[in-house]
Image (cartoon, rainbow, N blue to C red; front, side, top):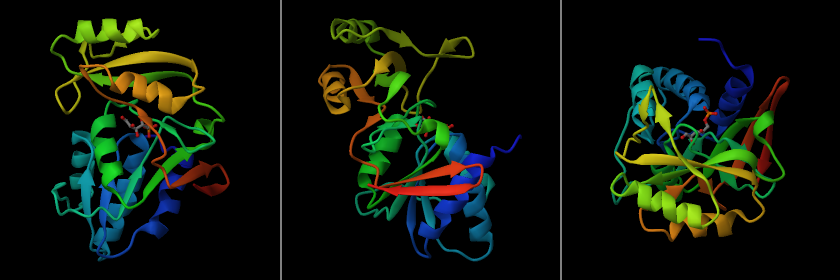
Length: 224
Ligand SMILES: O=C[C@H](O)[C@H](O)[C@H](O)COP(=O)(O)O
C-alpha cells in the first residue's frame, strides 16, 4: 500500500487524545487505517483501550492490528470518537459517507463525548461544494424515496459497487445527490430526514469538536 503522508500525519497527531482506559469510537475510511495501525501499536505496547467500530471494514482492520473491540450498548460511554471526512466547512460541519458508513458513524459520533476528525488540507473548505451528498435509504420502495428526493430538487443516483447496487453494512442502499454549493447544511439535512425511507444523510451538523489537518510539514488543529 502506498502511504498517504498527510493522512498518516493527521492520525499520528490525534494519538495525544488517547488515554489509558478509554472507549474509542472508530470511524471508517482510508484515513482510519493509519489511526488503527498507530492504535494497534500502542495496544501492543500496553495501552488498555476498547474500540467501537463503525463499519465491517474498520472492524477487520482493528482486529488485524490487535485493537480490542466492544459493542455499543446502553451503558457504553465513548470517551472520544475518531473519524475521517470528505469535506469540513468553516463552521465544522462535515460531509461524510464516501465509503457508505455514515449511519453507524453518526450513531457513534452522537454517543461520544468528543468527536475528532482527521483530514488532509484538500478537505478543508469554506462551504461544502462540488460533492456528492450520500443519503442512506431503505431498499424497500427505494425508487419512491428517490422520487421524493427528486421533488425536493435533487438528482439522486443509486450508488453501485463492483457492478451491483452498493449495500451498506445496515443492508441499505445509498443514493448520491450532487451538491454544487451547500449554503444551508442544516436545512438541507432536515429536508432529507423528513422523507419516509431516508435513514440518514452524510451531513454531520455541529458534531465535530476538533479537526486535525495533516499537511506535508506536520499537523494543524482547529477546535470548534
Ligand atoms: O463512509 C465513509 C466515511 O464517512 C469516511 O470517513 C469518509 O468517506 C472519509 O474517508 P477517507 O478517509 O477514505 O477519505
